[in-house]
Length: 219
Image (tube, rainbow, N blue to C red; front, side):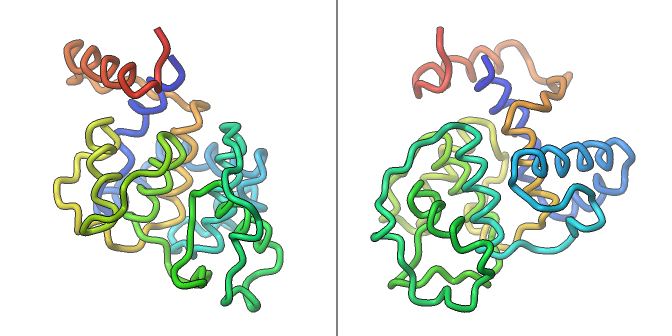
């Protein structure tokens, strides 16, 4: 049942930056963000235990995201599937040395992978990459020989109710640190908001059936 709440609670997360900017100003979202950052700190996803130091409105680099997502996968008790030898990159000599183990472990967990031997540690994380990592964490690697390469992750995320975005190309834009914090906190199952009033029982039943089919929910 926790997985059902995970999916339903994440359905409000992947929306536009403009809408999130409105939410971040509300006391309710501020309180949730405080709880999210504290949860991330308690579970070693971040070294910051308060919103100010967390810099929520900044974008997120790939090296920073490696720690977020790698430790999130560990929190969900995901197993390593790739050897450390296969996760050596040519461009991490100047990366934050405290994040190097997370770069490797995120690769070993098959959440992040590089391109032509490079990890691009200082590149901004995009919504497409974030969505891809979330779906890899929940449902494993999908076929990426498509255009754009995150299409199947986007399609599956829509089927699971993780996003209502129709335009797959709109995901190719930077994601903020507070968006990531709320996504991970809600996906953790530690914060399960009430279902939206307009969500009908038929929609809930349909979602349950899909989760059962994918093996993300037990009978």
